[in-house]
Image (tube, rainbow, N blue to C red; front, side):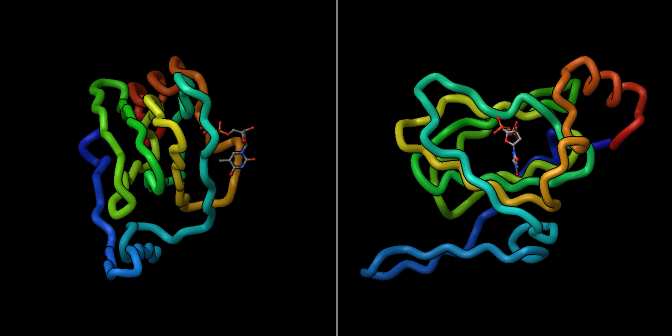
Amino acid sequence: MTTINDCQILDLPKIGSERGNLTFIEGNNHVPFEIKRVYYLYDIPGGETRGGHAHREIDEFLVAVSGSFDVIVNDGSNERRFSLNQSYYGLHIPSMIWRELVNFSSGAVCLVLASAVYDESDYIRQWVEFESAKTTKQCK
Ligand code: TYD
């Protein structure tokens, strides 16, 4: 079963020069899955939260490409908070982990790489359903 210990900060390449920095991300290399979708969260109003769900099968990798925010991950038993505030690392969240994105700074941009195209049926949006799936081991 997936636990919060499977949520890991992964360092990314950073090519620095006097002209600025460049970071790149390759699927099955810098992130442990094939990248099928990219989306980003931006213009988040102060005090607003995102997430509040788990994915049945999809892996995601989150990067604070601008500003900062916190990600609270929960596996149904334990919780951990990660602060993302640099463009050269990100957080890998495997499937069957509940996540909340909070504490967005002004101008924060959250880049998300996902292992599959959008599929609403992959979401678990009710906490009770997530808890039940974890305890009955219906899912990972
Ligand atoms: P959602 O994943 O709930 O946002 P967040 O976790 O950031 O709070 O998605 C918000 C809405 O956007 C929801 O109606 C589904 C839609 N959506 C897509 O159509 N495609 C996508 O790739 C994503 C991530 C969301």
